[in-house]
Length: 482
Ligand SMILES: *Cc1c(COP(=O)(O)O)cnc(C)c1O
Figure 1 (cartoon, rainbow, N blue to C red):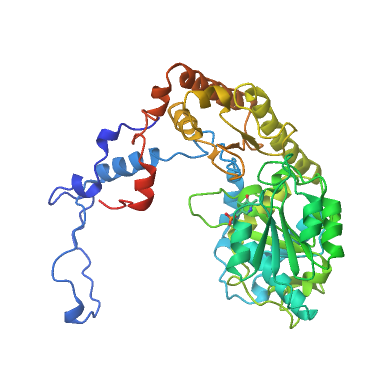
Figure 2 (cartoon, helix red, strand yellow):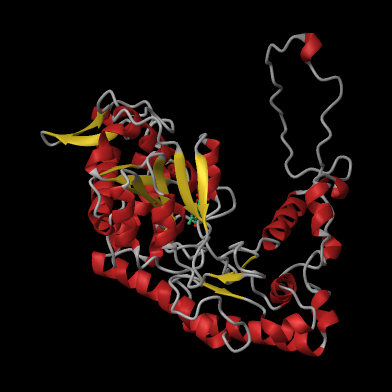
């Protein structure tokens, strides 16, 4: 599965003078007119390797990757699910991939139609009136949403609204976005059932409140079942309800956030809609909103006029652009292909499977790893190592490292911050029962090892290219070069 660490030489170390992959009889000499003083004096120090050495080198590196394509990846709050290859094909179609971003509307009808259709299908599913597909990520969507709120209150002459309320069960990007934008963040502690404390919220709402940012389901994997009462309280105070819907695969097709009272929300295409998450590739987010926020949306959006699709630069109240052109359209093509492949009913089944899988794992582990909440969870469950392991000095980190030796990526650990020693597992809807059973068996095996021989678990991992790292030193004094 993973190569032995011994063949870990860099290509430059494998280099031998004169070794070549390709010989050209008449090499093309560059004739660029580079001024003499700018030309290099010595040849660049590049590895000299045979073609076969290069093939082996990169194949070996590729096998060091831990990915959804090779392993189960239960990283909570990240939705590391399998994404159908077909959607990559769709995004690669020449008409989409080779379209020049400055092409005139008349030459971009296909892409404009796709963006228009994707937007209107989504607003329908979400119970919203308007949408922008421009943001490049979830956090970027939050930034866009708060810009909308700012513009909205300025337009109403209510500049004094400079507070954003963020429950402690929110995703970390929520308070970060609010403070980055110069708002004052007001934190509210969750109740013991993991939900927002509505009475406390009512006390904190006031004439300075701009927005309540509510992560749904929250980072404890719990649905905010009081959301209608929350929305009413927020609206009675003249504020806006922002819903962080990054993890829409827990809700899609089952509930419409607009019906619940959200004024705006974001979603992550690189979680729910078929773009791989992680690895630094492009993502995309969207802000969907109700009609009262629509005039402030970024431009351009796409509208249909007499059978043609045209860029719409909106009215003067727009916040402007948040991303070049129409955003990361390749990601949006994948999302559209994904939506075409699933009816509204099937999208609901996706959410049901995501929820079922998380509850299955929680139920199979609850005797050894007590869940934070006694209730059913949504698409992810938050567990803890439990008193037996704690008595042996075993921490969540040890459990995570033990899983690596058993062929599983670690779940999210120590998040959400409000749960001591949290282990946050998101199986996603694409995993089979067999895989979940294997994962459960691995978790139980880790527990058995931790109980019988705690030191062995503290030494994990032992099968990986590197052993247990000194995480503090790795963070403070990273050694990132050869
Ligand atoms: C992933 C996530 C975000 C942030 O999304 P990015 O695309 O990583 O910026 C925000 N909120 C929640 C609930 C998330 O799960």
